[in-house]
Image (cartoon, rainbow, N blue to C red; front, top):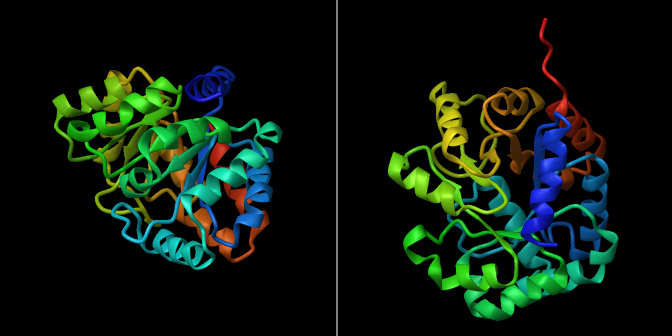
Length: 263
């Protein structure tokens, strides 16, 4: 469980020649009662892990689509405690790693050490906290490390080389490469220098590098995947679940994992 499970699952997929695909979904969007069904469905689609957003009233990294999903989830009464309770209820039936994406405020309110212990009980394998910079991460890092929970760091296009190296050195499970300027959301294309950026991250990162933010179709996923270990797709998946387009989610994941033709 925890960091070791992420490392093992990712190593198995990469060793078999697969790229890593991580979908993002918002916990409580559509109701917490559908969370188990959605996670099991995504696992059957062959994803490497699932990034599970915790709704928060004041997000900083989320674009319009995920913000709206968060509002829907909050209106459904979704809380961090409620999500952890649901995850614990079916953790023995879950093999795919689950990574929580949340902000430090809900964790601080819940209790830092209490949160780490609850993650273990719920079968949570990793945590992403986009509003905790390197200079302040000692607040939570020790508790996560003590309980074997991977602390996944994000690196930005604008990060100086020295900072990139330090973030990569500290990241556990994988390194989350933000591949656009700004917040999450569907983009039509990525700038050319993103590929050079991903290659640079691959050179310095001791853990797999995954590109996120702005990846919304199979072509983009395969394109970016040539320069890193895989992708994270959020807004598009959230939209498709909200619209009930389950088959389209299957097709998106399959298309993203297809090997690019050498012809």
